[in-house]
Amino acid sequence: MRILLAEDERFLADLVAEGLREHAMAVDVAYDGAAALERLAVNDYDVLVLDRDLPAVHGDDICRELAQQSQPLRILMLTASAGIGDRVAGLNMGADDYLAKPFAFDELVARIRALGRRSLPPLPPVLERAGITMDTASRQVYRDGREVPLSRKEYAVLEVLMQARGTIISTEQLLERAWDEHVDPFTTVVKVTMSKLRAKLGDPPIIVTVPGSGYRL
Amino acid sequence: MPRLTSIGRGSVKARMTLLYGGLFTVVTSAVLIVVQQLQLRILTQRVGDIPFPDGSTLSVADGRADLQQTLTSSQRIITLIAIGAVAILAFTVCWWLTGRILRPLHRITDTARRLSLSNLHERIALNGPQDELKELADTFDAMLDRLADAIASQRRFVANASHELRTPLAIQRTAIEVGLADPSPAKLARIRSELLRNTQRSERLIEGLLALAQGERGPDERTPVDLTAAVEQVLEDHRPIAERAGVTITAATHQSTVAGDEVMLTRLIANLVHNAIRHNYPGGHVLIELSPHAMLVVCNTGPQVPEDRIGELFEPFRRLHPDRTGSADGAGLGLSIVAAIARAHGGGVRTTANPDGGLSVTVALPALTAVPPLPASPR
Image (cartoon, rainbow over all chains, first blue to last red; front, side, top):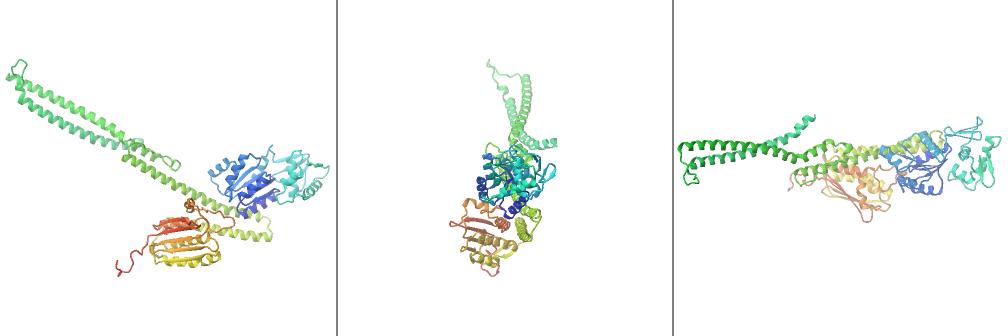
């Protein structure tokens, strides 16, 4: 899952990004509104975690603009304005969810996951396909009832493939959705991660390479 | 209660009806009685001279007394009936008219009774002639306007204060939950310094909030405060900061004393000087003038401030140049505190934007030096 975190308190933003990466999410950080808009124009994100009081471009303006574009992107407002009026205003502006600071980090993760599931078509919290069961809440993966320990990146790659429900996912799409913006697009990191993932999932192989197109589960 | 209030409501109406109705009845009755008496006199003197169509006059002695008796008594009855009719008419019309005149008063009372914090936007909006009642209703409406403004600004203040307090809390909580979950020594050091900075920021904020509350409440006791000495003290304290920022301070002070709280007044001056140094650029300058009439002017070079946004500077937590990132300096309360302290000392603050950037803030306080304390003075 690819997240953009727009937050002007640098220390808080770095901490949240670090915590979300621990949960196998690919996180980009924007410290002001203009940077957030720039990244939104370049990359495809699943969820935007948006602080309202952003310098350069206000969070409300970003939210309104995105709501008009009717993108599949989900917006979670994360702000210190906690009054009922503020929450209502935020949701009416086009946000999909609203979380007030200070927040419990686990709740933030759970809410981001819930928003990620609401992509089209909606996804269940436990994904199942080709004998693999993936519990997105506890981040555990089983193959035929046997648990498969996966690293964060391997998990993220497998999640993208599971969510695709059998359609082909290109290397670029994998890079987009499982890695953040710091990855080198010409790297072999996808290939390496894929071979590790295949080895861990064991026989018979279930991830198919489609030559010239990408991967399919 | 509704019975009681309806009686209470009716009392002015009843009093006015009694007063005007009674007055009208008494005057009319007196006139009627006088007229009747005059007619009676005419009747007794002249009834014998009434000419008859055949040329003879009525001169039958016994018949004359009879006729006089009948006429007198019938006239008396007519007068009594007229007085009764006038009384009923007067009281009815007075009752109705007073009710009509007092109707706006009921509307004002109803509105006042209905109003609470949740529907403070309602107004009486009385239309009609410009009379005393309309004036009362308009005054009431104007008072409601001011009240609504005050409450809106208080709500904004609470919302802003909670917003400012929540951000450091969020940082602390996330630092503990995420940052300290699995810390390396290097990370630990960074978290420690960030948390410390964060705590200092909260301290400054709380201190600012307390100063604002104290400033709004005003000084407990007023003593003569030597403003000149206070300004010199503040300048002394701020020289190192100014040097670091590359800002030159020029001061022109005259002897001036005001009645007030020394700590608060020093804080007022310090806030102004601090702001003037902070919103400046290297090589810029700050000019401080203190007139003998306790007029303090702090003028600084700095970024352009649009004239129409000057009012916002005095709203708590407003910063015109949002540079919160990284800078824990200032909670955005400085000028609000200045305005509160000046108001509490019976003074005022006026701010103008300098044409080439920066601000001129003028604080006018009521001076004590207008009458010199020396008994031998010529005044």
